[in-house]
Length: 185
Image: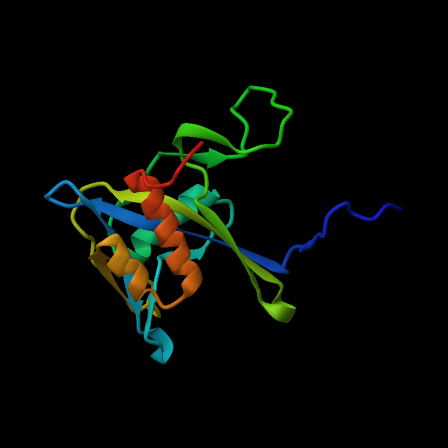
C-alpha cells in the first residue's frame, strides 16, 4: 500500500463540521462600501466576528454562507461575483493544469479556514463575499441563544475591530478584491 504523496489529514463522518460565512458588504450613499461585522455577547463573551455558522444537512456551502450571514446580521444578501484567482476549472472545459487562473464573475470561496478541534476533529469554514440586496434589515433572524449586534464599518475599521487575526486577514483580502487593490496577474 502506497503512502500519500502529500501530508494528508482525513476526517470521517462525525469527525468534522462544515461551516460557512461571509464578508458582507453594503453600498454607502456616497458610492463606497462598508463591511458588516457582528458583536457577540452570547455565553458571556465580548467578541467581534464575521457572520458564519454550520451548514444544514443537504444544503450547499454557498447557500449556507448566505443563510448564516442573513441569520446573524438580519440583512438579506447574495453572493457577490468578483474578479479573483481560482483553481476551479471552467464548467465543461477539460483543463489539465492545476494552476490558479483569474476569472471574472467568480463566486468561489474567498478563503477556507480549518480549525483543529482536538478529539472532536476539525471545523472547516468556507468564506465568501456577499452584498446586501438593498432590502431593510429583518428583526428576529437569530437563534434563541445568539446575541449578535451587526455593525457596518469602513473596511480598515472593521478589520481592526475584529477579535481574531485570521478574521482580519479575511476582511483585508475581501476588501483588496472588492476595491481592486489585489494585484491579479
